[in-house]
Image (cartoon, rainbow, N blue to C red):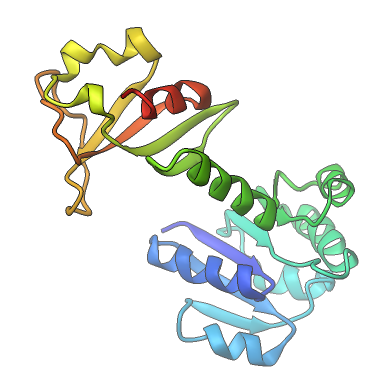
Length: 219
């Protein structure tokens, strides 16, 4: 079980901690606000009251088995997230992710050891914009460079054709990873080449973002 520490239990941190538990992670949640800690205590594996600016506090509770720490601080004051990232780096946490409120904030966090920066509002706005601009796109997940995994309703020109006949790798340079019916929450992964695409089916597709959008509009 992957062990993750979530530091800061505002709205983003609280939702993140609960989501990680549902995804099978063991979560240690930390915040200096007693009320926030009490609100998540029953939803995570361990919840502690503590100031993330304290190296001694973090060093005493972060065991070597903690593989990831996510800093969810700094909505109004940048100092706590910066000092926390520095402390986590000194402790030796291998993966340090942090939310940031600006590009300057992100650069500082990266310079002192954060391995990934998250812009919650910006990232949410971009994902929403994609769905507004391309209504057939159900969801999109970023990978390396500009590659994405996207869920999209099967476009019109794909209906009634097998995956072999569609030859999507040649036409769009994309891959179909899984297929599900619109009313079925479960995907069937690695569909065979003779799988026939039906109207209303949802496809999980891998490729570059522009190629995925072109495929979503393949009508």
